[in-house]
Image (cartoon, rainbow, N blue to C red):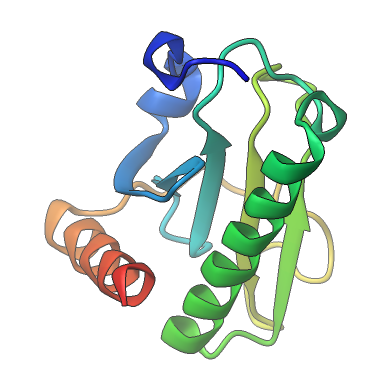
Length: 140
């Protein structure tokens, strides 16, 4: 089993998101795009690129954490649909996106990647409010 102390978050994920909470396996972050309430889970293990890089126990833990984040985001946003994806084409480090989608959002029904318009960064109070709500929901 890999030591979490050697884990380093990819600088692109760090720069594009706000820290929310560390769960037993994954660190949870809020993507800095106010158009889409969007959490990212990154398992705190070094050199992971694929879900299959996790052993069975860690993979089961991660699925439980994805479930918890999905439920929290749905409860907080009352979204129409949740998108859950692990792509890793731009950032190789294993990370899972959980995105609250709305039929009225800028990209509906398409993917949020490449959605028309520029990313809209959160204002500090708005980001910290959502981070706090997610943290509270996940710590419960």
